[in-house]
Length: 579
Image (cartoon, rainbow, N blue to C red; front, side, top):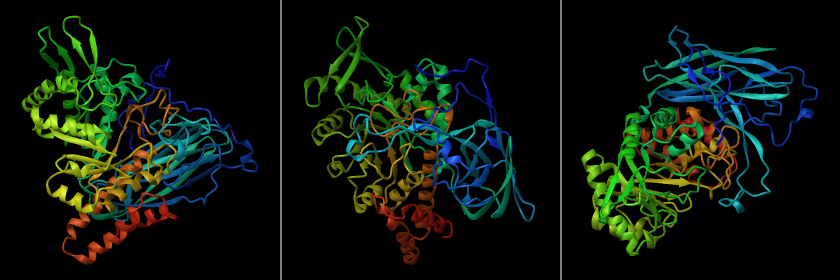
């Protein structure tokens, strides 16, 4: 187990902002990995002075390559009140820069109005990655996919020591208050360190529009959580008090993105242990000496209550009646040992295991007040086994909802499924989405290891994460699902690769509530989707305005990268702020 605990006293880390944030104590050594491709000293030949400039949030700047784009010390952001907007600055230096810091001043308007403490600047750090290879998309990590560094992790350190001949991006986030007066504001961002003393000017245009709080967003975000990964990486006992406290920053970050779904498990390893960490039991099944059953829901209840307190809880999606290997287990009350059971759908074992559990689970949920928001969730199961599971559910626990991530294009067979998510390769027609919405049902889409574009791999273009929600808006989906929010690999701080799939497929954020470029850009897209929804609602009956929105969205119906897609997205996002 690699937790990389510090042998020295724990470091007090601050986000680099205009006003210091609450001190956060880190349990990790955040040292970056060496570049698998080696250093690149020849690229720095002839470069004698450091560069500090605004860059683009659409780019991941290589660590060993000098910054070569146009140098600019001014940038402009535009956003609604209540929106988070981002910029990226870059420091590139031939000599070491010890003690690199940044300080963002309050935003001020010409009339003296002030927006204080709304800027957060984080150092972008590098992790080992590989690339998506279409012919080996969901298989084992191929030997012909060389490792390299990608800029992704957003670190909260108050200062950073830059080595010689290196580039260091800074991710700047501005959280526009909902009560901000519309207008133009300006902030100074001072970047200082040994041999560096530069000031950047960041302009902020605040529109008259207001974005609701994330808890009020309609966007159905479903990023699957993995509690056991937090316990392993942070070196604490699973389901202990300390475990729940260590999960708080990571899960609060998810709630702040508008997450709607609590990921829960019903029994043993719903995905046949495809992750680095096994899923720890949330419900313990015990078979008594007389053959009857008892179910201990203690952990399940605590997990759900924990997530509800954070503001997540439109649905509780429970995996799964159809685990990928059809294996279940229970505790034998006589021996005290766990017994594994192969319970293939349609066999007596399947009915014997699930028939008593489902009504007992429904009764427990009813007592807790959660029955109406709980779904029995299935992931990429065939029509045949889905038929067995849904038939048994209707028979013994018809009050329970159903959720399905569907890669078999079978959604029409189950028009009653409460939470239906289609693969991006099997889109649901907009007329069917509208019909489901009229019945109070949720319809989303997902991407995974088989999809090259758009996606959220460590090596994906940052704008792809934003594109996902523009695709959702263009196809009229209610939101987006990604199978792994924090299914961390062995050493997620330094190496985002796993034994299978493209690097970064298994997680979007880093331990201790550290965000990523991917996650920040994903939230940007969600905010855009919300803007589009509000504008559509307000334009109801106005065909001209609706046509304007339709034309704006039309290019993003493509699930294939097209020439100039990044510029098209930049233009569309800018236009959205003028509507």
